[in-house]
Length: 71
Image (cartoon, rainbow, N blue to C red; front, side, top):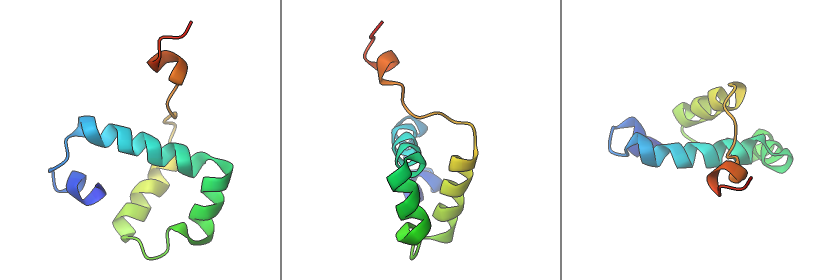
């Protein structure tokens, strides 16, 4: 999906959801451990760099209370 996005074949509206999922997983305790220990091995270096920048940024994960309209 990252390659499709990079090539302009996946719209930003669809990449947004994937990016948020990646962010949420890698920022979780278990996801961070897996990513650091062996998750990024064998992946395209451009993708690894993209994820590293994403995680280092200030972006937030999904807020399901806002998505579901909860008070």
